[in-house]
Length: 190
Image (cartoon, rainbow, N blue to C red):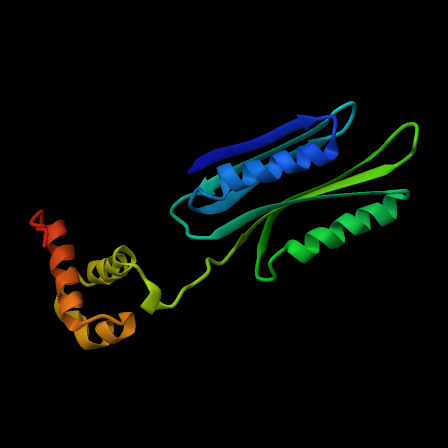
């Protein structure tokens, strides 16, 4: 488990949203795992304060995301609906929303309304075809299967694995040799 945080304080709502989006892209998205829980703090005043703290479980594969949107207009209801429409367009259809927050601020003189919406979500990891797996990904999958069967390579159909991964039977045999050698501390380089 790992806690990660991005935050911003700014007199400009637009600048704050851009800084949060940059922080999400640079700090949160590169980390592996699923968002277990989150805490969003959003406040307005002389400055807009936005803090997003996530608890990530690195053992659970997931595509995660944070969407931050803002809109400004004359009326509170229309402005909130506009920011929600914007966020809903960006939210993947198969996502599981972990947390969300919507806040508004009305400027004292011009009576302009600003609405900010934040959504934290998980979605199933994108699956690529097995033929596109890298050497490490292929060996990782074969190693997982071998672990399930007490490292017994006889449970594997070598021809089927070679066809599935679009490699030769020799490549699969070598993968198995390397996996079992590494588990037994006998790995050799070719």
